Amino acid sequence: MDDKQRVGLEAAKQVQDGMVVGLGTGSTATHFVREVARRIRDEKLSIRCVSSSFACSLLARAEGIPLLSVDQVARLDLYVDGADEVAPDKGLIKGRGAAMVGEKLLAEGCDRFLVIVDGGKLVNKLGLKFPVPVEVLPEAVQLAGRGIAALGGKTALRMASGGKDGPVVTDHGNLILDATFANDAKGGAGPDWKALDAALDGLPGVVGHGLFLRYAPKSTVLVGEGGGVRVIA
Figure 1 (tube, rainbow, N blue to C red):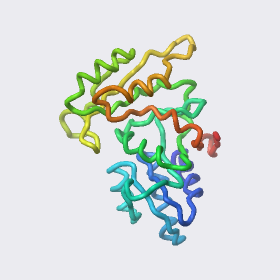
Figure 2: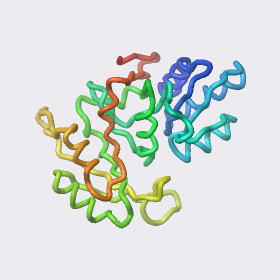
Figure 3: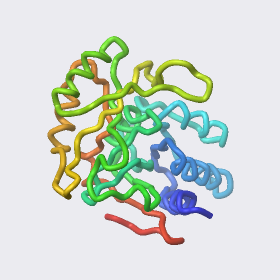
Figure 4: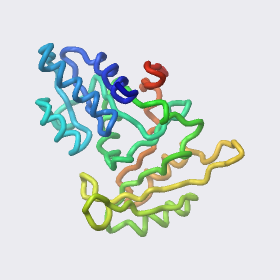
């Protein structure tokens, strides 16, 4: 059992009968979804689930998990998902799988946000390993790119791989600009991520982005490392 599987199984223990549960997207969240499906089958667990992406919906249905759409529930008791980077203050960068807009809907609507990662996702400050993905309307790629540049960022249009020509197209029919912002190599604070979070939200043509900062107060991070699971509350 690797760290991703271990932390996914540990997170599934927190699902209780009668809950409304948000299902995350990605390799670590996949272990959580499959374990929830096992508990539904073996323990007759009665829960309602909401998916964060089309890929997650396909997995959940293949595992026999019945799904509701996000507009069919008022609140989620629990949302469980991975992250690409986790800062010491529990600020996150998400969206390597291009699903951050759907993921943010669930993060906004949940009472508890359980973030599941392996130890390699922990960083001293955001932006060290991954760019910030920004989902933009196709006709606004140039406009949004200029807006991000004015905020000090450099952008690259995310291109598809694995047999598809052209750019990545999101579940909502939009494109992804991966934005990098200069970090201080000497150990300084780097960008003002909270200011960037708000500024990116305000750019015309931007649908959403992968900075998940405002959800830290209701987040708990489970870290799989060294053969165990560490909790960052």
